[in-house]
Figure 1 (cartoon, rainbow, N blue to C red):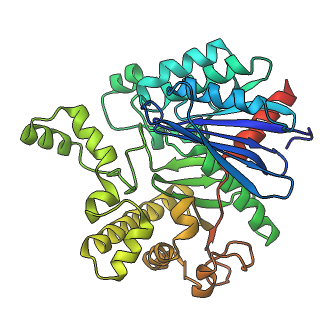
Figure 2 (figure 1 turned 90 degrees about the vertical axis):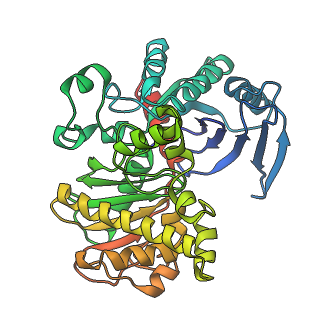
Figure 3 (figure 1 turned 60 degrees about the vertical axis):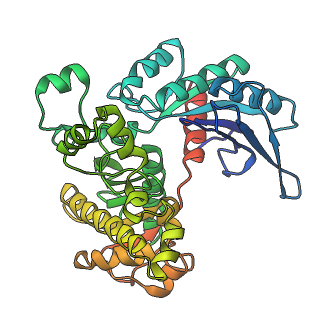
Length: 409
C-alpha cells in the first residue's frame, strides 16, 4: 500500500460510458468522481461530483465539447486540473482484455498501448474504448505514470485444464480461443479482503478455499485457492457462465445457428441479442433489475419469479461446480450490486447450497452481515464453510496497483 500523500486518477471507459474517480490509495476516499453517459451520441453528458471539506457531495452536469470517449475524457481531465485537488500520484486505467499477454498490472508505454489495441479482437466493445481513455489521459497528463489494470490478469493463474476448450487446437494457437475470465479486479480485491477478515477470526490464510460470486448486471464466480484464481465461469468473452442482467450465460452454441437460420439474422446479430436482449430481461419480459423483479415476484408476476429462480439455480450450480477445482469450500463470498444488497436472492442461493453446509442466518442476512463476526457473515456460526458479504472496490485496487508500480519504478 502507498505511503505517498495524494490521489490516483482512476479511469474506466466502457462501451458507451466514461467513469473517472480521484481515489486516495490509503483510505479509499474519493474527492471527485465523474460519470459520462451516452458517450458517442449527441446526447452525451458528464456528471461531476466533488466532496467538500464538510464531507457533503456537490454534483453538476456538463456537456463535453466532443462526445467521443477520447473527447469526453479530455474535457473532464482539463476541468480536473482547474480544481484545488490533492497531488496526483498517477493514472490507473481499467482494461477489460489482457489476453494471455498480461499476467498483472503494467505501466503503459507505446508498446503496451499497441498490445491493448491488438487484443481488441477479443473484446471489441471494450478494449478500443479502454485504449481511447489511455490515449486521452496521456495527452492531458503526460508527466504522470499511467498504469493498465486488466480484468483478465487475475485469472492467468488458472491451470490449462481449466482454461482450455475442447476445440481444434488451431483455434487455440492461432485465434486465442480459450477461457480468459472477467471481473478479475473485483475478484482479486474481494478475495484479499475476505482472507483478511477470515484471518481475524482464526482461519488460516494459507490454502484458503473461496468461491467469490460477483453478482450484478454482469455476473461471474471464481474459485480462489490460496489467493490465486484456479477456475472461473466467464470464458473467451463475458457471455459465458451465469445468467446476467441482459446476457444469456451458458447455452448450446447450436442455438446461434438455429436462430440465424430461422430468422435470417447474421451470427453477429444473434450474439448481440444474447448479450443485450437475454438474461433476466428476457426471462422476465419485464426488467433486468433484480430490485424490480423482486418486487414484482412478490406480487405474483410469473415472469419475474421465473427469472429469479433461473438466476439462482444457475448461480448455485456454478458455485457447487467450482468447489471441484478447490477440493472443498471454506467460504462463499458474495459481492457486486446483487450480492451485496439483494437479501432475498442471497437467501434463495443459500437454500440451494445447503448440501454444502451453508445454512442461512436470517437475521445476519437481513443485516447484510454488518453486525456479524467475522464481518459480513450471513450463515449460522460453526466450524464448517460460511457465506459472507464483502463489498467490492475495484477503483481502490486500481489506485493501489498504480501507486505500487509508480513507487517500484
